[in-house]
Amino acid sequence: MKYFVPNRHSQKLAVVVDKAKKSVGLVFVMHGLGGFKEQPFVKTAASVFKGNNFTVVTFDVANTIGESEGDYANANVTNYLSDLNDVISWAK
Image (cartoon, rainbow, N blue to C red; front, side):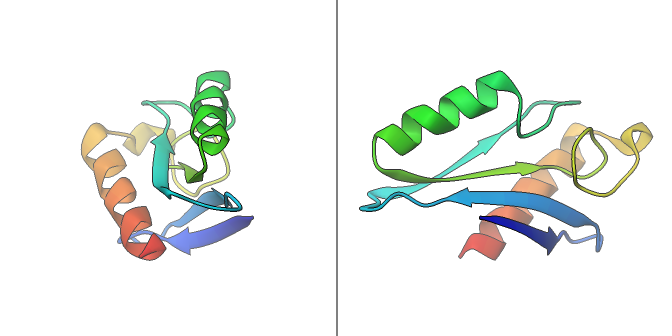
């Protein structure tokens, strides 16, 4: 299921939650700098975790390619980490 959740800078992040029927845990799979949640390696990693009964969360960080808000000129690793922490907090 897809959600749009705010990060700490009030930018909307596109988040996809793929729930396992009998989940043994929760996994966050994140793309790299300049990436997006539909990249083949992100989808492959998510599929492996889902196949092992994990609920998987993928998302587009802000300021990158994808469905989240922001300008790529503002992309940096610090913001990516902040967005990961914001998505983890939202998932709790």
